[in-house]
Length: 236
Image 1 (spheres, rainbow, N blue to C red):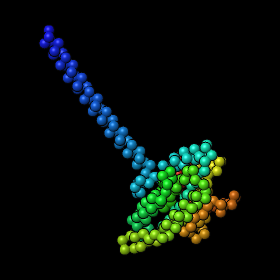
Image 2 (tube, one colour):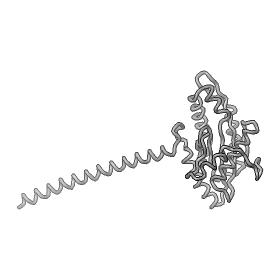
Image 3 (cartoon, rainbow, N blue to C red):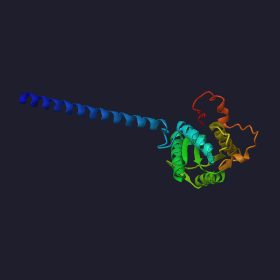
Image 4 (cartoon, helix red, strand yellow):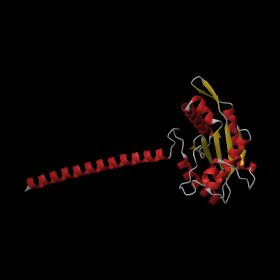
């Protein structure tokens, strides 16, 4: 009888150990699957060319959250939009690899100058957005001007060529009645105005008249993307 009992205990112990090992194996597989899923989710929200820089999808999501929070709390918020002057000429003259290098350098430099709460994203082509929560228009305008000054003083090297890059920058402040689209539109119009005035400068929405019909890229794209969710701007 004792032998039978002992044999049963040993059998049960082996079964319990095997079951525990199976549970641990399944937990490990689940953790690895969750890690892979997290990596995939991060990749969905990151620009494939610019390491660590958010893409338009991540920006649109962050914009909606920040806009709602700022309006609910009645906190200031600003948006900077900029693109690279004559970027097509760089691609046409030196090739797309040179253009890619310019994008990488600019995104790295801009990110290094921003505050922890600021949100930088590549919105399409050579156009970037910076979301500035809890920021007044005056401060945002200073940041925009500093970006212009930074690249005006900076020469970018590609192989044997030295490239001088400048930016056209638009700045808008959040209004209580704003939607993400209207907030983006005013910043884009201001950026377009900076280009019209000779490029290499920062302009705020103050330069826009209330009834101005600016031919900005965003406004041209609004009709096409009116039914698309989330809202996406045409690539430059």
